[in-house]
Length: 166
Image 1: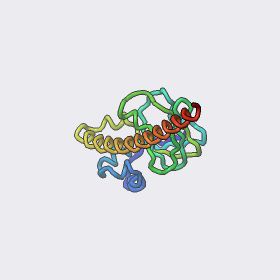
Image 2: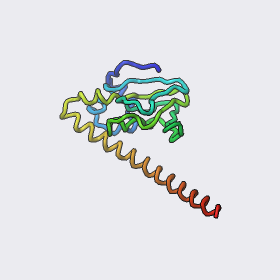
Image 3: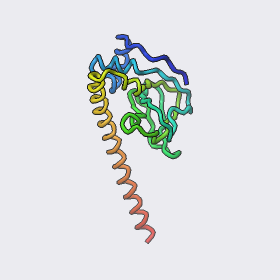
Image 4: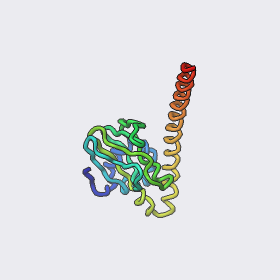
């Protein structure tokens, strides 16, 4: 992994990251706070980004490349769109990583240090976190809908298999 220092929220950086859903949905002042709590991380293909079962405080936004998400060695998702977010559960539940993330190609991520965000003055932090939590709720709702659809499909397939064995 190659990592930049914490970023300075120059106008040019803010404009560059506004296209990312998480950053672009924030007011300008909050965009600056998030960017200043972030680093650019570059990963080689097959390099681990997140290890399942380990605690850390980073949220990732994919800028370029592709990432494979795995749970207990089983693939869960492949992320390849600029703006895809992963690692967000650490901010919500403060527990160890529930899955691993591995670069499936050379990739670049905006890595947001949630511990840095916690040092934001409380009057600004509450507004920032409210917007971030709303975005994460939307993201998690979409993932839950997809998981429900997959579960229904698997149950139907299992019932069909059971019916064939009788």
